[in-house]
Length: 136
Image 1 (cartoon, helix red, strand yellow):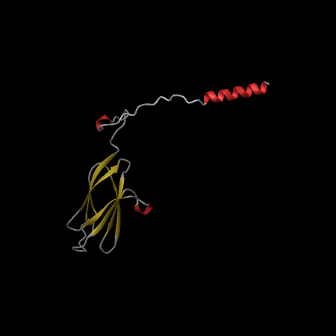
Image 2: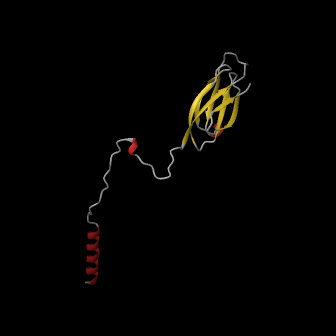
Image 3: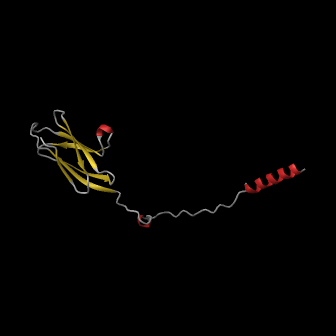
């Protein structure tokens, strides 16, 4: 008898606990404009920066021929991310505006001459624009 009473009590408490309760729902307010978005105190939007990079060459070994310039966020030999790529001649610079995370402090410049000679240069990427000469 005590076992049945105890079992009945457990079943009754289980039934009461599993009854559907009214959940209080927080209403979702649609965001109508970007001005209505607020960031937490202390949050800074400056997580990235724009950096103007220009690459030139003084190599006149291949007149009228273009060399390829590739700029990476980390060492390309270790799977670095390609940011931008273009061409340069001895009379025309390669120019690019790159949006960089503030975590990136150095760039790798890969210069491929028309004879397939590859030159790599690591440069510091601060907040000022970069003007890089890949030499001759």
